[in-house]
Length: 83
Image (tube, rainbow, N blue to C red; front, side):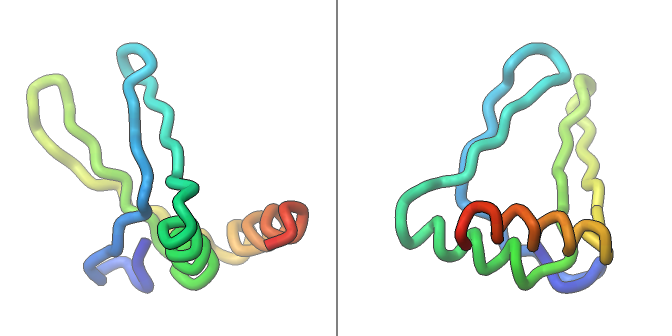
């Protein structure tokens, strides 16, 4: 998570596992300290970086901004979860 597109990001604590070719499942850590930090980052930061490694081993990063609709979606989810 990062505050703007050019900033260096802070990674969320979690684990990504390959389900099948081209599909991955990402789980966030539920350890108290990690969970608190992840929640803070998800609430306060506006940008996600998604690192990719292609089959030819080339790398890329997709930067995604939450924007107003994303902020509302996260706020609604956190409210539903009591966060």
